[in-house]
Length: 468
Image (cartoon, rainbow, N blue to C red; front, side, top):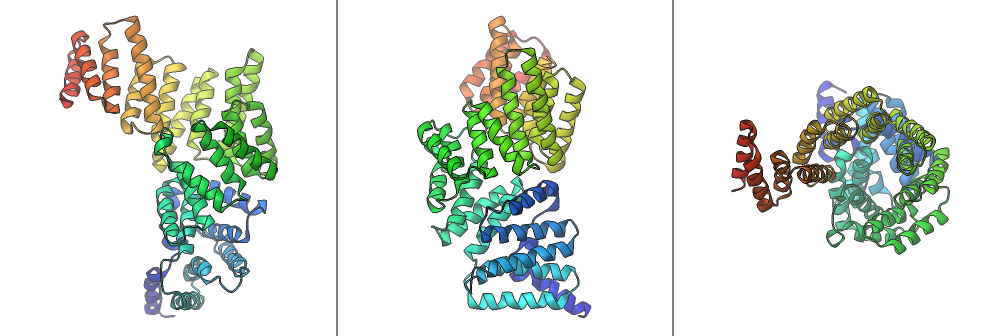
């Protein structure tokens, strides 16, 4: 093929293709090591339908391409075609994504004849089904965004919603929307405003054999204090899928949240026997042992629990190097174990990772402030970081927790000294960020009557004036 034909072919590729190569999947947004582990785990479990396995093969093919292994990528894409065709004659729409992937892969491999062949196959499908977009493509796009990076969750949500507009009763798209809502819905959202429970119910109704969805619904119902139904769903799921590691790990989370830590540990260790490379399970075990530390009655019990906690958190990070939440939890454990240098080093690593991938910075800042307050006893530094964390996003979980910490510190100081102007200033900032304007003004006015530092007085005046 001439260079002119090559250029023409490349220009035509994105024009009518919907596939991994055209969905804006940025390598820098993806933890490829962790994603590869999770995809291999899905393929090795053999608990999914042929459709899900075919989809996993397509994802794996694209990951192999990103890692520079075109031959392996081709093998996975071809396996996906075989699995998809086993659905029967009415599978053309399901082949759109993988045919697009193959066209792009062959183009990158320099095999323009094969690339053109797959473009022709896609044209035939488009002639057969001219109404686009296809729900099947929107759904797979949603699952891909959901699987590849949390940065793509909003895009996943939109894809599932569009797919459901075309096919409202399709179980796959209902399940996808339920999972992405579960992962993104504000922790503090009131049940009256919540859509996740309704969507999870619909997902369970359209996927009655999916025990993972039942446990997720149970976990969310507990937050809304619907304990009886939650426990019933979790017991059903465990009875139906006693060896399914995804079910077991979420059931383990459920029992930990309910205070049954030892039962949770037993379940999670069972799951770990089947998927030893799961960063998620190691992290959950770390959280279980963290809870055991709090309930321990002797130094020996604390020491044992902390050793296990640190071990599992370290394993989680080893398996998933960008696991920032596990880093902050491990850093705090080092701090509580009086290993301040390792704690500081881990926090700095977490800050670096959060900045590098532009994610989770607010969370790291909150935990670092907690470390400064509780381990280093640097209250002034902790206050500064809690305030910065609060201002990043007052409505996020970390923002709300920072507000709680600041209120506690300020009120304790005021109880000890009713003329502590700085403490009233802290309260003013908290109320200002929470949108409680009048309370904020009153606190700033009180603070101004007690503070004598000129720079701080000027700052307080600016804050007060901004609300008037």
